[in-house]
Length: 111
Image (cartoon, rainbow, N blue to C red; front, side, top):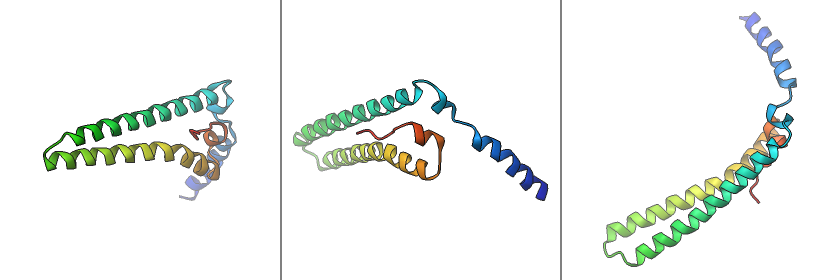
């Protein structure tokens, strides 16, 4: 059992010393960052469209059950947008604390 631990420690050092393939590419980190910012913006625009459409439908809805369903849909859209906004900065901060190579060269903060 001890030889497995020794072998795993010896195998981890060369892997940790290698540079990330993403960070070593010419324009790939900027492309990933731009893609993340674009998808975040599209997600926020989608939130605004869904929120406004749900509000408009809610004004003309007569049944209480339908209104509650629309309100649930609006809350779900808001939760999704919150996750979308928090995920990039959270990965950037947590990744830099854990020394993840992708977090050092790719900026995932959408603003």
